[in-house]
Image (tube, rainbow, N blue to C red; front, side, top):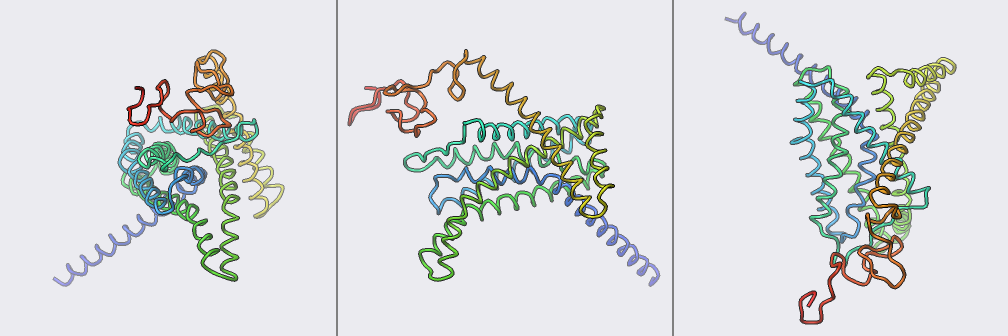
Length: 361
C-alpha cells in the first residue's frame, strides 16, 4: 500500500517536472518570438498616439483602453485561430504570407520617408468642433492595429513553427498578452506624460515644477524620435523578412552576400564589439533592402493613382481638381484646415440652410 502511494508521488513529481520544463520552453519561445516582433511593436507604439489626438484629457485613457481591448480581441479571436490552422495544415504558406506582411511594412516605411523628405510632410488633422467622433477613431485604430497585430503574430508563429500545437498555442497567447500590454501601456504613458508635466509645472514649485516644464517641453521631441525609430524599424523588419524569405524560397544571392559580410566582420573583430558590428551590418542591409522594396511599391501605387485620376495632382481624389483661392472644393487643400473650405465637412453640393430651416432648403 505504501509502495503504491510513493509510486504515485513519484509520478506526480515527474509530471510536475515535465510541466515546469514545458512552461520554461513556452516562456523561452515566447521570449524569442517577442524579440523578433520588436520592430513591429515599435511601429505600433509610434502609430497609436495619433488616434487620441483632439480628445479631452479625461477621455484619452478610456480611448486607449478601448483600442487595447480591440487589439487583444483581434489577436486572440481572429488572428490566433487562423495562424494555428495555417501552421497545422498549410505550413508552406507561412513564408509567402510573412513576406506579404514584410512588403507592407516596407511600403509604410518608404512612404513615410517620402513624406518627410519629398516635401509632403504629414499634417496633423485639425480637431473637429466638439472633438473627434470617439467610435470612429477607435474603430479606425483597431483596423490599423489588425494589420500590425497580424504581422506580430505571424512573426512569432514563424519562430515556433516546429513546436507542438499546444506549445504554439500557449506561446502565441503569451505573445498576444505581453505585446498588447507593452504597446498600450507605453502609449498610455506617452499620451499622459504632458498632462503630468503640466500638473507639476502649475501645481508644484521648485524642482518638481522644473521637472514638469521639462516633461512638457520634451514630449514633442520624444514623439518625433519615436516616429523616426518606428520608420527605421518598419524598414529593418520588413527588409529582413524579405531577405530571409527569398532565401527560404530558393533565391540565395542576397542572403548569402549579407551573411558572408556579417561573418567577415565577426571574424575580423572578435568579441562583443565584432558581434555588435555584424548585427548592425545585417540590420543596415535589411533596412536598405526594405527601403528599396518599399520605394518600388510606393512608385507603383503613385503611378496607379495617377493613371486612375487621369494625371491629377497627388493628394487629391481622382477626377477632382485642387481648389483655387476663392473657390469651394469638396475637400480642403493640404494648407487649409478641414473647416476652411466654406462649408461644413460632409455637406458637399448642399446649400447652407437658413436659420430655422433644414439643410438645402
